[in-house]
Image (cartoon, rainbow, N blue to C red):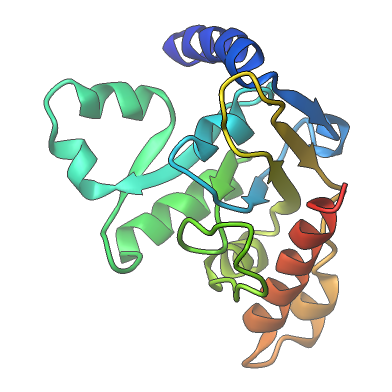
Length: 193
């Protein structure tokens, strides 16, 4: 209930303030585990990639936010779960995998940090690929295009699922690394649209 209310309010605000345009929502499966893998520009990115999606999108949030009275309750209602700074804890990994295996949607930023568009060839972190390979979740690349300047157009493009079958079947010690490269390449391709 709270999630849907906040999502509705943010949809209106983003359309007014950032003239948000979205394409490719049809690529997101209507059921089953899904990883939305996006580039990362600012702290506004989680709602940007989640508000137009009909399914509830979960995100990792730094553990410190969960110690703020009242705010902890709110962000849990909005689908956030805690992650330790400087690395992903076993508990965060377990929570993410359980969400995906139980058919939920998680938004994740494989770059691992906020990156300006001028920074080319950023190497992605292996977390998203590892979650995908261990859960069989669909991987949907997402590109946020724009600068969050008021009344200037922002775009979000959702691409077709990234096929990671070759990395599941052939595995090997570098499977997550190669899968990450493929996910990052898919995001980069979408940013050209």
